[in-house]
Image (cartoon, rainbow over all chains, first blue to last red; front, side, top):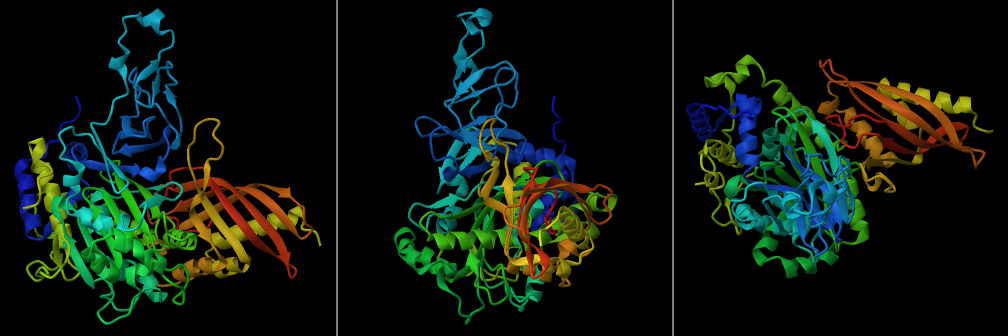
Length: 456
Length: 165
């Protein structure tokens, strides 16, 4: 029998109390029992991002993906419907498809030759009637479907939990903000090429929390871009705007310029796209989007996004925005695989699409001048979290980490036109505290349905 | 004057040494002003499917200007991925001239194996693959006019790519 996570409930309750006080015990970044509990109680219960509809536009198009340790075969069937299967033959369990993407009508297992069609039906068994007889009920041996698959704004999610709430309810108020990034233009977004993939020795919570709630790191982690004159010298530059705490552990920062500074509306997106924003966004969404320079956040647990304005040259180069989504796939307490998709509006001018791609390549991804340094620092967090002192579960002053920023000091902005609890600064740990509170509630939940209850 | 095989080998070995010694300004001087420096993403595809390099998505898609910006960044005090610097060996081998259609330019393919030591980790990260370069002569000097880096790994195995290949 698989290891059953053995986390003492009183220890978890103490962690929860600490989180509510604005501190986080460091041991949770590198504890193997926490990791196993997360796999069972978070990733097996929640919605996991699998891919974008534009990656599989035609019947027979498929991509292979992972939900933590579950290999997933995601495809479009003959009817044009999206299907997601466990990528494992029902005969002896072989990983059925090893290509990253492609076009097929059937999938044949290389072990004994069982063949499945796009609907997952077992349509071929070598010497079937001779060895299994006419009585074999092939319908019993179809590919195993993921219990749930659903899409929003072209984003395909799967859940291993048949009782998961609907995707719409899971995304909740985040949808309003996803609309701004993904639903603003006619026809939505498209993925360019394939996602980049790479490995970092860190814990998934470190990167999820960084994108979700930590604009404060930009001034120091990305100080090289300040030295180069690409980013402003003002150490508060990523604080202007709003940090919005959303339900279900999600959060987004909508960073603006300092009041009074002139920035191009709509992240400098080409003027000819603006009429589409009129058509597709509400006045309140446009009001927020028009002033925003950077959108960055996390859809709990491990889907993050960033849409900044960035330049690949020096300070005289124009800044171009892009949209990037990434999954931090946990593959152990101290190891993640990043899968990172560059997306662009289908209806954007071709010149913008190219500039936007170059802006992404230059700043994010493994070679990106910003992300290079993020990865360096995230590995250092976990490297320093594995020893006896950091792992001491007797929580006291020197093995908890500081998530106190703004606690009890910053009040929500009642004039914010969007959903969620919006604070008038992005240098704030409100999203992080909500993220970790949602996380610990999921580990504490004993009933499946408790895992995704909204934050109270 | 024709570019000899010896010229090509000396050029590539000198370039590798400059990269490993972090003499990036001298390395930039080897690059043509119009250089195209690209590293497409590699994928696993079904047997018989055509190309397993994705031209549309890359790790590097650089001009001389963007490479200069990357070098200038390494010279700041806060490019943490290389502060302290990682240590590399660019092993370049199997060098062969694949095209000599013009007298003043050659297309050269070479294998690379890059070993990288990071901080005090005893494990060395490594990446490997093939580069296809166009090297030409400008005012008597050999310059790299184009480089495409074909990595063999589909999942990039290092935490970042804060080095040049």
